[in-house]
Image 1: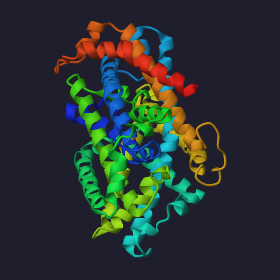
Image 2 (image 1 turned 90 degrees about the vertical axis):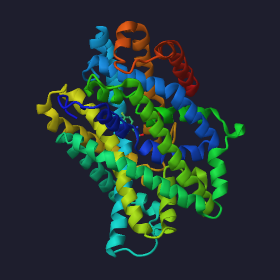
Image 3 (image 1 turned 45 degrees about the vertical axis):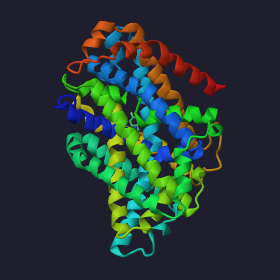
Image 4 (image 1 turned 60 degrees about the vertical axis):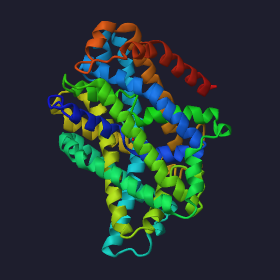
Length: 442
Ligand code: PFF
């Protein structure tokens, strides 16, 4: 999105930021994390953190963006006159750079599955969709590298030519279509024999399943899905028009995100029960289970193809916000440098995405700290850099900005809960983030 071409309406802004938020986090990561960290217990903690921590932080990021109206490696200085605080912007820049590196791996898997299903439609591949063996897909390093290369290339082209506004228009019908598809999958999944055990696993919180790791990852998940702490949302809000309604926008994005996460869970867990998978399958969960659900449907191949296109679209509207953040910071909003910076950043992301993808094949034996190279990149971003970025911004908001000035940015939709929100951001959330952070390091 070019600085000059602001979103004209609140709806435009909501669509763009919902596009950044709703992506692989809700549809791919949420089910696999819930599968590992106790199903219902994880869902419960995720909902709690999203509403109590995520929502106020998103409101905060929107307010900062609207107030500062510049790129995020400058915005902190502009708002506080303290140059060193721009480090929060740089932290976000680093976070999205690494994030794009591993995000593109999963984006690449979607591209590869799309290619397989397309071959099937053309008659070059036979058999049920379930024949696309996940292990074979991800086990071939060259194919996965090509897949993620295509994903990065698509993102780069969109950002280079600044055609995000076209994408925003497309999301007006792509997003509702994605909802409809998810509902169809949920209905099919729930109708399978043996669906109840998976459903119970997702919806019934069992206290014995609550673990410290589960708590940490549930918090990390709410940061990840709402794109918090990377300053990505600050960047989007800095492009928004004065009429943008902070509170309504944030609330709608949070609710849509919760809805998509829950629908993804409802689509997958009943099918896990029915097809005899383990919930702890890890990152491949969605890719293993969904083809089998579509195999059970009439016109399943065609439906799966459309679903994959919608899924890819949702992933791309998130990845463009990742690249956009780097582009806006390195071009300093000078659009003549946009093409060059988008190109260089994409090449660098492609390079760091290679070890991430090889974590599922030739480098899978390299395990340390959080697991494989891929797991460590994810952990570093979701559990360290994003919370650190959010912590920095809460402290700036609570202790360095003028409270009354801040209030005026809430604009036409007067924020009745301003005072409780402000005290939450100033006193409670920094403590929550610091405590979780320390526990995690221990
Ligand atoms: N929220 C996105 C998702 O859930 O897929 C990921 C993301 C996008 C995180 C943009 C951070 C960001 F700045």
